Length: 242
Ligand code: SAH
Image (tube, rainbow, N blue to C red; front, side, top):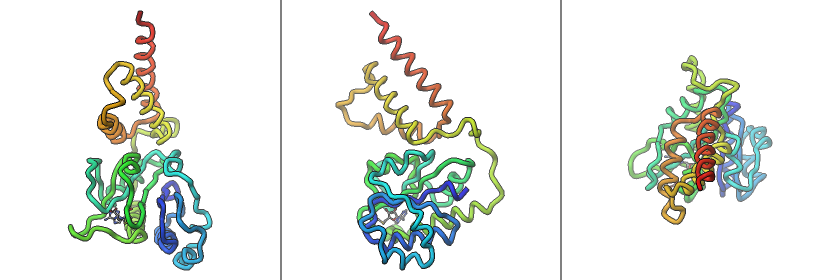
């Protein structure tokens, strides 16, 4: 459902780009825009560039920090023009659209970065997948609203295809949200510290690799409960040791 897809623009500098992104969304049936600390909003330049997609701008939700704009989502895609040092699973816009629409009712965020510097590595680490729009090798950076247009187009295209086979998720047992996963990662980290497997003073590579592993599997709520039950049992055993 395109209604469950949130286009998240992070720290956008030029209000015209926000308007153009709203227009790009509306042409493809998307309406849920989230703005994280835009430099200027609302703004007449944004309205002018929206060219009639004013409703998308009016309904836009404003957030004062990045994490809270993603809390209720079960699947998060981060877009990036550059190959990053970070090795994270990377998809094309088509693959992104297929995954976004594969599970009914899941809330999906597609995140777009700053005009000059994109998204930080820390912001990208909160995403399940990275999306790179294929370009020629040496000129890979599209205008922000053009990037939104391409993702929105792919979503519209995939939405029109006959529905794909059902996934494991059911209305009673959905894919865990970012908020639930963050609680699980904190619990896992705490337990790994308690069994001396993870040293919090050492670089955070282990934490990142574990998050990448679990993000890739798209855990269901019941599976998060199962894993957290195991962690609780490990902690209880440790605490009962003489
Ligand atoms: N110099 C920045 C480019 C920012 S362009 C960088 O290296 O990331 C602004 C935003 O548009 C990016 O953060 C991304 O969200 C989107 N974008 C631009 N080109 C893209 C591409 N080829 N693939 C995916 N997203 C792209």
